[in-house]
Length: 276
Image 1 (cartoon, rainbow, N blue to C red):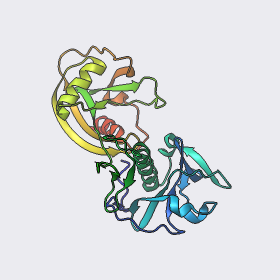
Image 2 (cartoon, rainbow, N blue to C red):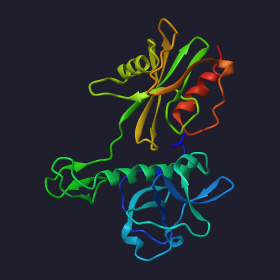
Image 3 (cartoon, rainbow, N blue to C red):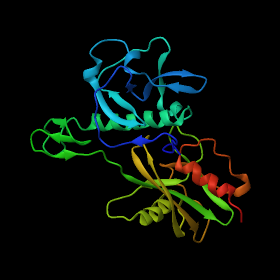
Image 4 (cartoon, rainbow, N blue to C red):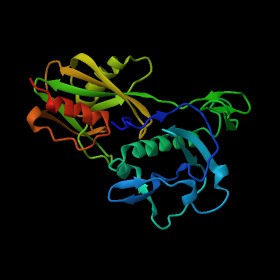
């Protein structure tokens, strides 16, 4: 999955350091990131690759991978030039190496967090970055804001040698997926599984079993994967505002998942390759 970047090691501890000419810089424009792209291989710019002066002051420390520090160029635009161009985050998912895809996605997640928290949600005062932890602090009331990671379930609904695959409605992502949804106020994760299955496809499930979790930086959620068995009728009633398709697939008919990044695809592949 996207976070599995071995032998590289991700360091998310807040340990800021000065930006240097050799530091990796994540530069975003709308839903795209600045890359040097060649034959499916991506390269992130280092500070020395970027044009202009005074960029150091706009660089915010993000994290480190191995000994390489990554920074976000915040609130400054950099034009495309030479081999450097903006690539959509959707396209980035299919590039290599995976550890740099992971870095791009995490940088984009933190960029959105920076943008959303310029002002305090309690009093409306201006916020500033905390000096010793990854947080914002309100200059007026002292409210502290940390990056949020809302939980979301992924559900592999099975019926013997069949699994239910879905397609989202009204999204750019057109591949098969599994029933999914965010945990609501006052719910356990298992209750979320039952509710989302009932709401999205009109089914009941039993024997809900935890599989694995995954931080998913593209949406900023913590994905929690479960398998659950069909309980009763297999008649699907789609929630059409969420889903465009819901289809039962026998194990031998399941499309091969060609992405190695997501928990969803891993769960589908685990079921497809399972032996009775």
